[in-house]
Length: 124
Image (cartoon, rainbow, N blue to C red; front, side):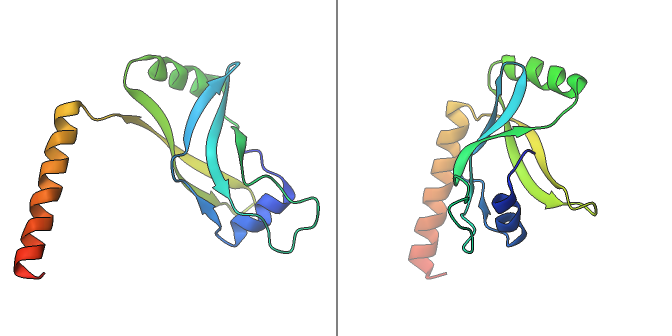
């Protein structure tokens, strides 16, 4: 993952959020979009943008495989976790996800409603 100096310091403090972030291809390169890395509190005017596209570094074979999968309907690439390796390099684990069908969503909503009603009734 290509990041700047203040982003590294903020990540070391654990200030990253994956809410609504996903990966997309742009000119054969993979970018992570809407990954929020908070501003470094001791940063000066050189502080980074909190939400920007960040390039992911993968080899050509991996990029080709992922791009072929994402062209299929319903598949998308999502970031799962960011971690620091021994060399002081931050890496991102990504996963290939498939969206829910409409009937799956209805079933999930129904289960959530019944669980909420049960908790309300029995005070759990």
